[in-house]
Length: 360
Image 1 (tube, rainbow, N blue to C red):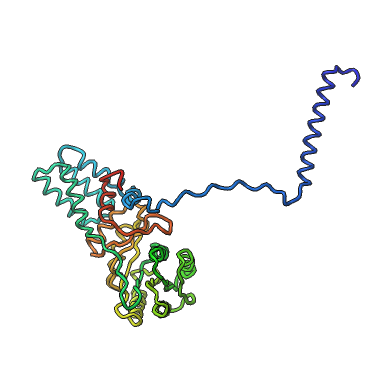
Image 2 (cartoon, rainbow, N blue to C red):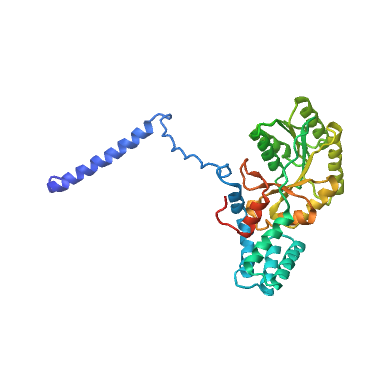
């Protein structure tokens, strides 16, 4: 190497030093004690839940009904976008209402009302206002959950088929009452579906309320009976009873539900004070047949409409009230425990037909 130029020798020496340094660093890292592990970067805190009171209910409806509004938008634009409204535009509007699952009967009635006014010379703006008025009239006034009686707990029986969001809605409803300072007991009466009891227990823990449960496959009426006895003994304000997810075509299951209903009355005379059916908004017109069957079996008094934020079939609210005569009392507008809200007819109609893009 004595024949190499000085500059080359210096470069080789520098390279050797660099390699040695890297090797020493690797060696030291391997000798570091196992506890000397770098802490992973902390993830940022999740944003506040959009379901808080900072967001108005009207805004939640407007956001939740975006798909339903989109389904109606073309028909509404064709019907009310010009200076006049013709038969072709009315037919487009009727098709749009049917697509949004307002119901064929209701859609035809609404269109006929507008047709008569159009023949009398009403302009598109007046007809749009008339459509809102007609929808609002068919839904009726807001109706809340029954009040607690003076001599015992408020008893709410919740029915609906599997997959409708029934158990989840019960947990959210329990949370609503708990936030109001009410004492709540849940009855795990869905004893036939695998995992249903554990699912309700999880929701009970989240809401901070006790759950009365038996073993899988036990008598639903027996579970409800014991839960009501506990509710009376503990002075509970509210007892919410889960039931099996029942296919309305199975008469024997409906008979079991009727048995549960009778069992409730034996413990708390006059109960249940509310019979709520949980309907999945995404199934559209199938919700009507479910509501009819359950109403005949146990006298449904109100609807909890779930998944309203993820469907283009929000018009089913109108159909349920107009054709079944059962009011929507609560709606699910999201996945969070605080996303079950009282139904607001005005906010719903405005959100459905796009009266305002900045409600609240």
